[in-house]
Image 1: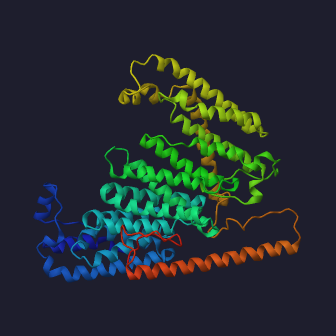
Image 2: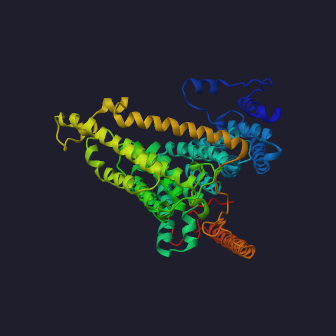
Image 3: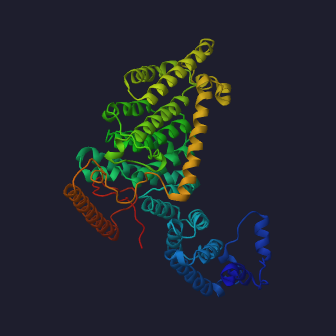
Length: 537
C-alpha cells in the first residue's frame, strides 16, 4: 500500500534527475518554472524519460491490471481499490505518452466507476476524475463519454431507494463531462436521443408487449432523465449546441408518457412530467404538461369504490414506474396519485405564474379542474382541485392590474420576459405562498422515505425482471389451481424474456465484433434495448 501510494512521487523524482525522500515530492527546475508559467510539463519531456520509459510502462501496465481486478472483486478489497485508484489518477500524466495503454486504463476506470459495490461514492468520484483527465488531456473525449454512457445505461436497469443516490451521482458525472466539450457531446447526445426515439416509435407502431417493455423500463427512463439533466445544465445559452435537442427530447417524453394511458403506469407518466417541468423551468420554454396530468383524473378506476387496507402506506414515487392491478385499485394508491398529479400541475403552473400571459394560459386548466371537482367522488381530489382553482383565480386577479399598467406591447419580447422580475425573484404572488408550503411538505416526505429506506428498503420499488402485465397479484379469492396456473404463466413469461434478452445480447456482441455500430450510423432496426455504440474489449 505504501509503494502504491507514493510511487507517483518516486517516478517523477527519478525522471527529473534525483530521488525524493520518502513521503516528499521533489521537483526539478523545469517543473517549477512550468508551474510558475501556468503550464504543465509533460513527463516525456523530463530529462530521464527515455531511460526510464520501459520501467514506467511496466509499472503502469501492472497498476491498470491491478485496478481492473480489484474493481471486478471490490467486495474483497474496496479500501485497496480506493488507494490504487488514487494512484492511477495521479499517474494519468504518465499514461499520456502510451496511446495503447490509455484505452486499457479507461476500461478499468469505467469498471470501477460503474460497479455498485466498488468502494462506494468515493471510488466512483476518483475514477471519474481520472476518466475526465484522460478525456480532456489525453484526447479520449469520445471514448470516455461513450464508455460512461454505456456503463451508466447498463447499471440503470433497476431502481431502489438506496440505488437512487448512486444513479444521480453517475448521471452528474456524465453531465459534467458533457460540459467539458458541448460541441462534441452534441454528436453523442444526438445519437443516443435518436436511439430512444426509435424505441418509442417501435413501441407505437408494433403495439407488442416486448416493444412496450423496452420503453416502459427503468433503463429507458433513466436514460431520458440523464439527457434532460444534461440539457437543463448545459443548454441554457441560446447558442449552446445541446439546445437544439430540447424539442426532440420533449417530444419523446410526451410520447412516452402517453404510450399506455392506464392508471397502472401513472408513476411513469409522473417521471416524464418531472423531466418536462425541469426542462421548461431551466430553458425558459413552454411545455404543454397540464393535459398529461388532467388525463389522470379520468382513469376508469377512480370512478369505482377503492379497496381500503389500514396497513398500506403511500408509494415512493421517486422509485416507481408501475404498479400491479391489485395495487392500482387500492385507496392509498389512488389517493396518493391524485395528490402527486395536483402537485406536479401546481409546479407546472407556478413556473408560468409571473408570465404576462398567465391569465389566458390557465383558462383551459381552470375549467378542467372545476369539472373534476364537480364530478369526482374522491373527497381529497375534490378539495384539492377546488383549492388550486381558487388560488389560480386569486393569482390571476393579482397579476391583472399589474399587466394593465404595463407600458409595452406584446411584440416587445424583451420587456415581456422581464415582466414582474422583482416579484418573480421574491415569489410574492398568492400562488407562490401556497406552493412553497407544498414544496416544504414534499421535501419532508422525501426525507422521511429516505430514512425508512435505510431500515427496511424502498416502498413499491420495481425489481429487475418485473413483469409489466403478468406479474399482477390479484388476490380476489382464486382457488389454488388458478393461482398455480398464474404462477406457471408468469414463470414461462419470465423465461421467455430471459431468452430474448440473451439472444439480443448475442446479436449485440456480434455486431460489436463486426464493427457495425459506429458513432452517427445508428440504424432504424432495433429489436432490443441496445445502444448504438460499444467500446471494444
